[in-house]
Length: 179
Image (cartoon, rainbow, N blue to C red; front, side, top):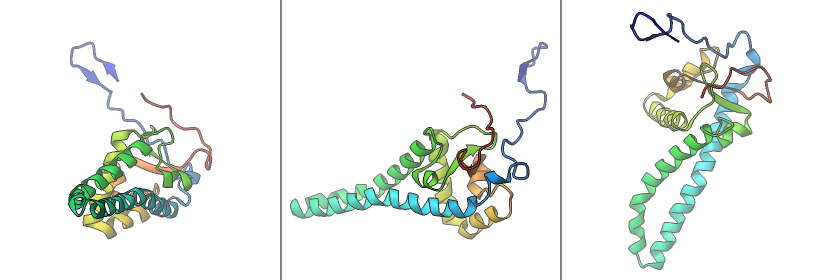
């Protein structure tokens, strides 16, 4: 972007950053992504569920030990579960690998459409938007991924993200990091 000398403020001369990941130029980035994304989701579901289940068990046992008083903590369990899931996705996608544990196991990573790595707010928003879209439009969310070259789901389009094979699995030159 350049600052105009006429005093009109900032402008980018009508240009827009191109997509960093073209499915026709680099098909190796998207090969098998849809299937492995499903398995990555299932792994992440287990990773998120284990602490939640342990928390519920702790509250149940604590309630027995305190003769029922501890069971009042059950009202905190659901909000704590939601916060845990949001923090998990935000921290993992905002981390150095731009991937959750399930995505790392399946050799996937999340990037912005212009090639930048994920960050905490993007990861947290990605999780929230995914769960909201699945709750209301479940079949449509899955079908969208089958009809585009980048295998993007509905929430990926809204957020401007793409899930690709990681650089170890499909080595290509990535776009420069933007800070």
